[in-house]
Image (cartoon, rainbow over all chains, first blue to last red; front, side):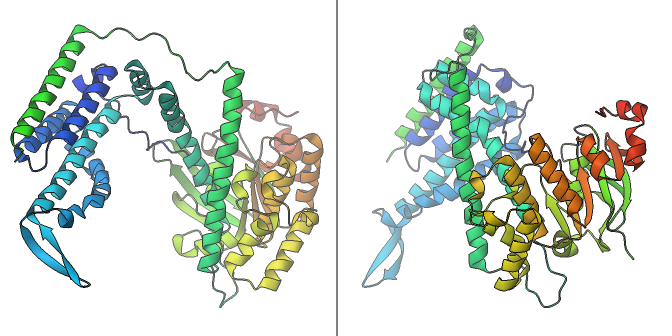
Length: 268
Length: 236
C-alpha cells in the first residue's frame, strides 16, 4: 500500500500545463503578491483577481470543481484573522459586554476580515493551479532558475521526496497496531484499554516515527555524500525561455500591476 | 468443527485499479502449517491482509469460524496474530515489554495476566531477558523474534507471517525456523525461502498474478520443476 494521492500534479494537456514552469512560478508569485498588496475592501479589484484565477483554472483543464474545494484549505487559517472584526476602529455594528468593558464589532473590521478571507482564498487557488499543472521536479528547477537559495530548494525537494516515505511508514505502523487491537473472546472484557494508555501508545508511535525519520535522514545524507553531494543537486542546463513564454510573462506581470493600481485607486 | 481459515472466491483490486487477487479460494484446517509462495507482486501480502480485515475485497473470508466483517474485526484480530515483514513496523513502543504487552492490554486483561502473557510470549521465542530493552536498538534477528512475541502474547489461534526469514543471516534464520516449528498453532507463512518451506511447512500454496495456481504437499510441489519455473521460483 502506498500513498499516491498526495502528489497534486495532474498530467493534462493545456496551455497552462505547457507554459514554461519558470514563467508559471514567477507569475503565480506575482499574482499572490498582487493579492496581498490589494487594499482592504477594494471589491472590484477582487472581482478581477477572482476572474483571472478562474480563467486560468478553466484554461488549465483542471476545472473549478478540482480547484475550489482544495482552496477551502485556506479558510481555517484565514479564521485566525477573525479578531480584526473587533479590533478595528469604525462604525459599530454591535457590542459585546466583556467583564467591565465591552468590545465592538465594526463594519470596517468586518470588511477587513472578509477581504483577508477572499484574498487568501484566491491566492491559494493560484498556488493549487501551479502545483497541479507543473511536475514538482520542474518546479524545483524553476525555483533554482529564478534564484531561490539552493539550500531552501534542496529542503523543498527532500521534503517532497521523503514525505511519501514517511506517510507510508506511518500507515504501516497504524496497520500493525490495528492488527493487534483485538477483542477477547471472554465475555465482559472491555477492549481498548484506558484513554491515557492509548494516548501514550499513540505518542510512542509518533516518537518512533520521529526517531526513524531522523535516522533515515542520517543514512540519506551519508548516501548523498558518498555520491559527491555538496549542497546542490545539479541538473542539465534548462532550455532558454521562448519568445511566446516571455510575452506571457510580461503580459501577466502588466496585468498584475494593472489590477494592483485599480485596487489602490479604490483605497478610501 | 470450523476451519482456521476459509476463503471463498475472494477478489480484490487496489484503488488505482490494479487487480491483486482474482477469485481466490483456500481452506486451512486447525494446526495446519501452510506456506504461501510466489513471485513478488503475486498477491501474497494482499491475501494476508484480508485475514484480519485490514483490506476487504469481494468474496467471503472466515477466520476461526468468524466472518471477517467490520462487526467482528476485534475478535478476528485477537484470533489472528499477524507478523509483518518489517519488524520496525511492528515494534512501535519504547521497550520490548510495552510492545509485547500491547495486545493483552488492548484486550482489557488484568495487570497480572498481562505480565504472565508477556513472560510466556518472550519465553516462547527465547527472549525472556529482553523485556526491558529498547526495541529500537535490537538486531534484525532480535527484532523478528520480538515481533513474533508481540502477537504470541495475544494467544492467537492462527499465526500469519509475511516473509519471516527475509534478510536474516543463516544462524538467525535457523533459530527462527526452529521457533516456528515449535509453535503449535495454525500457521500461514508467505515466503521465498523454499528450503524453509520444505523443512517446516508440509503444505504449500503457490500464487501468481493474484491467483492460486497450485496447492498441495510441499515435497511434491517442490519437486515439480516445471511448476516452479513457470512461476518464477527456484528450488535450491
